[in-house]
Structure formats: structure tokens, C-alpha cells
Length: 436
Ligand SMILES: Cc1cc2nc3c(=O)[nH]c(=O)nc-3n(C[C@H](O)[C@H](O)[C@H](O)COP(=O)(O)OP(=O)(O)OC[C@H]3O[C@@H](n4cnc5c(N)ncnc54)[C@H](O)[C@@H]3O)c2cc1C
Image (cartoon, rainbow, N blue to C red):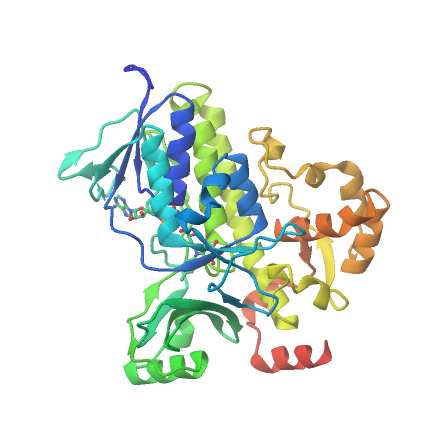
């Protein structure tokens, strides 16, 4: 039980980032108030890759999340491209880094429950922010030693546009499809009765001049299903928050603050969990300990997250033009012959926190000199795995290669500048698929 004179922290937003921050702060003896409207998020199945699972293990909450009775994990990646089924028993494979499928609504519910159980006070309400970034609730300013803004995605001028659609979906959601399309990403849930709903993420440029009917036709063409309803486009980009720490208001912004091309490719959930974990560990230092160092830490990690999200999205695009998503582990072996990988040279890019010595995410090999040496020269997956096998027991070499790829420590070699200006065309996708 925190003492009466312990710092009082108000966390605005009880999504993955806010609740994980609350859990960490409670463990460090703070008094925590969570403010959330209490409205469950829309039904959505999201994928969580191995680095996100590792984070949850490190935080000591994976065992609860994995409990079948909570129904948070609703599926695992199937062998087939990006089509996953959530029906039938879920088998978590322990022979490699496979993403699992999460029911986002159930995840929110469970995390909120864990935070309250650990001692957070939950206040149901929606905070408002004035032009100076000062928050209030029901007209009264929010007073606290530290305020954490974890409201999730907010619109940003750089964002992608999402067009949501419903094809009369009524039945139980059954399968999820993520697909890279020539001009964006399709995220689609099929219900057990065959109806569909989803969203298409694309750039504003692609929607310019399109009226309602043309948008509907476009969605029908892309999704392959009749769209009963197409929503107005909304900004879907994850916005970069240049001022993460606002000392004058004692406000720290966290969440999937990654200026990514899209939330799926960047695995926003992992970014949200990671920034919540960072806040849980370091936020108290902003007000009590070494404030300037803590502030520098947060600014640095935030910028690194932004770059990491951008890279992983671009990497996902790259992989998908070859076959379909090395991103999703299954496919790595299939396109490895064609693809050349290189070690990421940006020291801030490693998404693991171990370089700061703050949290023990199990990725010791990422900073291991011998391993980094083995990867110093670019090469195909086969070549890199062979070089790793000189440093590590052979069965580990493949797993380490795939893990480093998932973590963005090694990346497909590509011309990033060219990629940004020229999204993949469907012809190129077909050509390369045919060749591989
Ligand atoms: C269609 C789609 C598919 C996605 N798929 C994936 C995927 O497959 N894998 C993946 O890793 N990520 C995916 N993402 C991204 C992922 O959902 C987010 O990165 C993640 O949920 C962010 O967590 P968060 O805690 O930062 O914010 P959120 O989950 O948005 O939580 C924010 C919380 O703050 C509350 N809140 C908002 N405003 C206020 C306020 N004013 N006052 C108080 N509370 C407030 C909200 O109610 C909510 O509970 C997807 C996103 C979308 C849109």
C-alpha cells in the first residue's frame, strides 16, 4: 500500500501504455489514479510479435494474459501468409518467435483490472487538454505530482488516412487478413457468416477527388467484398509528439507515439507497451530523482521508437513486395534466398532497453560483440545464419537471426529514399512473387 506522502501520479488513458505505466509506478510505491472514459475499444484482433511477448514476460504479466479464461489470446499465426484464424484451439508454439493474436478489447479489460487490483484508483471520465497542454476533468484542473498522457493515437498531419468499411458483418469475427496493397494496407475481419469489416490505410493523395461512390468502389475492389457502408476517412497515422516531457505542467506523453506509416506494420501495440514500461520504471525520476537525465532518457527513447516504427513498417513493405511478410516470421525462410540483410547502424535503433541497463528484456545477443561482428557484413539470411553459427550453437543461430530481424536490429537492405517516393506497384509485387 503506498504511503500518504508518496508521489501522486495521474495517468490519463487506461490502454496498454497507461495501464503498464500504472503497474510499474505502483510497484515503485507511487499513488496512481487512472482516468479513462471506460468505453471498451472497438472489437479488434491485433497481432503481437515475440518482442511484445518478451516485454510482457519481463513485466511479469504475460502469465495472466496467456491464461485461457481471460480470452485475450484468440489465435496464433497460421502457416498461410497473412490469413489467420481465431477459431479452434490456440496453440502457442515454443519453437520460434511467432506473433499471437490478441483480442484488444479483452486485453484492455484485463490490464485495467490488473492495475486496479494492484492499487490504482480508477476514475471514469474523459480528460480535456487546453491549448497549453494542461489537462482538466469535468472542468477542474487535474492536480498531481506528475501527469502521464496515455490517450493513444491522436491525429497528426503526417498520418495515413483510414477508411473503415462494413460489409454487413454480423456474425462472430472469425478470421483476420492483413495485406499489403499497392497503395496501402488492408486490415479485414471476416465473420463466421462470411461478412466482412475492416479498414484500408492509405495516403490522402490516393483519395483526392474521390466521392462516396468511388470510395465504395475502391474498397470493394481492394477488399473483394461488397461494402454495405464506407465511413468518412479519418487520420490513422501515429503522431510524433515532439515534446514528450513538459516540465512546466509535469506532463509526460507516452503511448504508441510512433510516426509510422501504419499502426499494423509498425506493431503499435509493442511500442505502446514499451513506452508504458519505460514510464513505469523512469517517470518518478522526473519529479524526484535525476530529472534532467530522466527527461533526456524519455526524449531519446521516444525518438528511437519513432525511427524503429518507421523502419519496421518500411521493412514490412519491403518484405511483402517479395513474397509476403518476413515480418511474420513464417515467411522469412521463403524469401531469404532473394533478400540481402544488413545490420542496423543506428545505435539508438535497438528497441531493447538493455542498452540502458534499465529493464531486462531477454535479448543479450543484441549487444554481444561477437554476434554483431558476425553480422557486420551484409548477406542473405543463409549467409548470416552461417556466420552466426560460428559464434553460437547451431540451433540458436537461426532463432537469433529471426529474433534480430523482428526487433529491427537487422533489416532488409533497401533504398529507403526510393521506397518512400515510390510505393510498391502491383505489377512489381506480381513479378517478384512469380520469380521467387
Ligand atoms: C485497425 C488497427 C489495427 C491494428 N493492428 C495492430 C496489430 O495488429 N498489432 C499491433 O501491435 N498494433 C496494432 N494496432 C495499433 C495498436 O492498436 C495501438 O498501437 C495500441 O492500442 C496503442 O496503445 P495505447 O495504450 O497507446 O493507446 P490506446 O490503446 O488507444 O488506449 C488509449 C486509452 O486512452 C483512453 N482515452 C482516450 N482519450 C482520453 C481522454 N481524453 N481522457 C481519458 N482517457 C482517454 C481511451 O479510451 C483508451 O482506453 C492497430 C491499430 C488499428 C487502428
